Image (cartoon, rainbow, N blue to C red):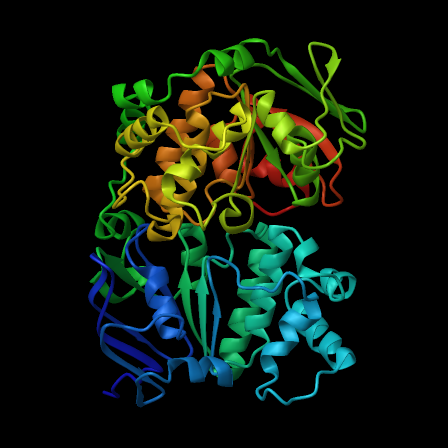
Length: 511
């Protein structure tokens, strides 16, 4: 029997950040020509290991072997040489450079290499065309800072796919992609594997995608190897979730968190915010002959390609002018010159783009929790009662943090997402708009977020929820506004019509 050859082998990897131990002797082996699913809950250590393999973090101890040779402090050299490529969960693009420059410049291996704009455009178009040819030709010359999160995700993936690497590290690469784009990405990966023997380490919390693309899986739990190289056809979804240390049925636990006495105490609104929440009526949203009534306490879904939902979200929150949207409340037109005006009128916003539109990375956790309250109340200093409320929120939401004064970077991505929702619990807005809020979070955290949103709806907050995961809209929403591929609203789906088949038909996108 031939011994299995591995492209990458990690043995007994240990990594701590101060007193926090993240990796505790973790093992991983990846073979050429395979898609290896790397699974675990938020905070288990997945992103940390990827950053060690790609040279972004140094390991405290343990060994790494790549292509038969042990690598010490030279991990980053493999990335620089193009043999290892990575797509991080938090995208690493330079906003002041164009799409073409972001894709092409990493290929300039020497600091004295001459940059060619024409060659860069050709490289970018070729790489982006692997996933979206139309976007490739339309956007290669645009500045990355002007792209949506969805578009930046495409650029990041294209840069990695076009690098010619032997090992591709993908940390939640499909979190911002439509179903059709995800299928095209998987087709490209399979072709590269067949042509070059590429090895892929794939991180996702979407079990359907894992089953579609991956061959084997390794599961990490509390920084240790819980399952090592098990074929995916030999393990069930239930077994995977249990090995991750997550209960299969977690709705009850999440609901108890949302309804706990501590959270009720922490989220008691001020007189000002109670008045804000009380004077609102039903919203009416209309465009191109399609209208939807949004009553208080409803959870309304948005489905379709990003351009349509994004334009409505911008109009609802004051990010951009309403344009062709007609938005009224009790017959009065609703329009905000900027998001802070919307926030003071009881409109909250949560994005899945944590790094650019959510988390305040240089401020401590307590400032992140009270950020919305600061805007609404025009306050710049954290007061003693807010510190007490923030501490109660962390306890009620089971957010494990060393201190309220630690930076958000000490928390996992999923936990950071809970912070963004928690900041609105203190205010109880009359409208909360959510843009892919469960991006990159595990099953347990998703369920906890669902429970929090349902609880807010029960308390009278109207919810507008955009997700590219149709199964999420089916679970949460009784009514969904669908958009076509050009961003125009097509129809309003209600009750039994809110299913994956009907959503796919209404949007022109695969479920």
